[in-house]
Amino acid sequence: MGRVPRPDQLVDHLEVVTLPPSHSKVLPVKKYAEQFQLPVHIWPDVGSCESFDIGVVASFGRLLSEDLIRKFPYGMLNVHPSYLPRWRGPAPIIHTVLHGDTVTGVTIMQIRPKRFDVGPIIKQEEFAVPPRCSAKKLEPLLSKEGANMLIAVLHNLPESLSKKKEQPKEGVTQAPKVTIAMSCIQWEEQTAEQILRLHRALGAMMPLKTLWMGCSVKLLDFEEEEMLPDFTDKVVAEKEATPGLVLYHKQLKILIIRCKEGWVGVRSIIHKKKLTATDFYNGYLHSWPQNNSQTALKNCRFQTLKLTTVKKKPKGSPNAQNNCDTVFSNA
Image (cartoon, rainbow, N blue to C red):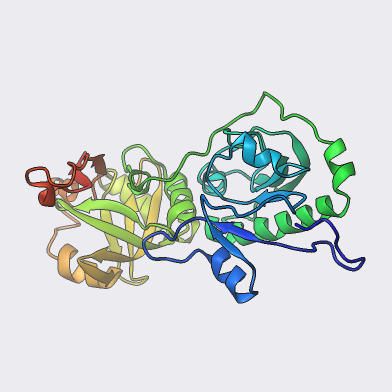
């Protein structure tokens, strides 16, 4: 940001540093910069910093050196979507939803060299999480809040920096990177509410996974527990409701699955191809005796999928072309 802005202008000059494209996908910030003809640098190239007052990062995910931070007279700020010190790390919004937080926040903080999310707080605001809000819906809400807070800080930067305060040592929690293994439903260990929170947190990024007859499948379009029919209570009384048990409600055209506690509903599934609940019932469930045999009911269920990371052999090693990233097994 330039040092001599016009009287009617907060920012005189702006340049963008973005990460290299991932899997040939251009990051939105790069598209935006190009749309408005802003100079773009691809990390680790940051261009010349001498003519700027301050650096700002948001969801950057890279440690910054002390030499780089010192090139800016006012240092560097981070717009972080949580009420620090809660949810330090690269996935604060996802962990906010995953753990059922009803309140989160946005923090404008100074960056400390080679450490994530530990710097002093410049400005901080709480933000109420809407009921049943997904991570996908929460992100733009916090982004807008963070943008407004950043502008407020920049309007009177020296005074804002003079009021900074160190983060409290109590209440620190970590928000580590999301892994594919997190998307695997654990029917025997997770309640209906926990599974629904998992879907709200991860569903837009990666569908929740489970096992059906030894095959990995993805579950889509979850229904909230209170929307499920009352007959689930009768099922518990009449049958042995093993976690993972799959039932089909013909009137509602929905799959209903038993959890450690409670039930979740699913309207579609990916098993080789996308199937509606009715398609799945007609193709896989209708032949199972859902009203009689206890043994059959125990087998007519989804099972927990466990992913195990497999290290790839170096290129050129024997059978390197046959290596895979993950394998799965049922629990």
